Image 1 (cartoon, rainbow, N blue to C red):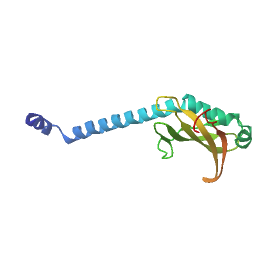
Image 2 (cartoon, rainbow, N blue to C red; image 1 turned 90 degrees about the vertical axis):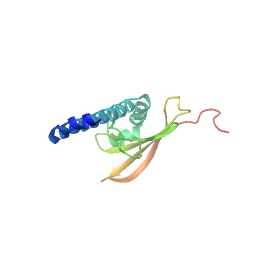
Image 3 (cartoon, rainbow, N blue to C red; image 1 turned 60 degrees about the vertical axis):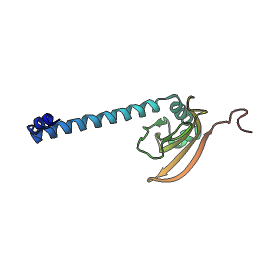
Image 4 (tube, rainbow, N blue to C red; image 1 turned 30 degrees about the vertical axis):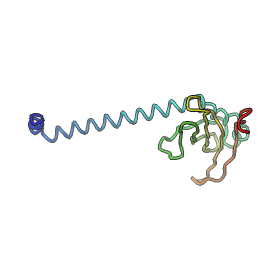
Length: 148
């Protein structure tokens, strides 16, 4: 260890700073790419495509937002986007020709080993960044025999 420190003492600070800066950039880029990949993988998942299709099939929503309705990117830094073992909540921006809105999706799993299912979809409307209303456009039917 002493020999390493002696050799390290001969390296200029500028070189050490460059090495440390390079490692920080590479590490930060790696973390960003992993998060970006996870977000895109979930956004393209069956359950998210199903939720966006529910929005596109709702004629009243199409009239308000305008065709075509497009789903935006999930903000992974949004504290309201939560997934745990058996339920979750995800907020996805929607845009149309006329207006924008936020799609609030509640997700459920029967157990941690099953696929996600859309439980409920609400649409939240904004005017100048202030929420002016929310409507439900989908509610999952409870399974036969579930609960008594």
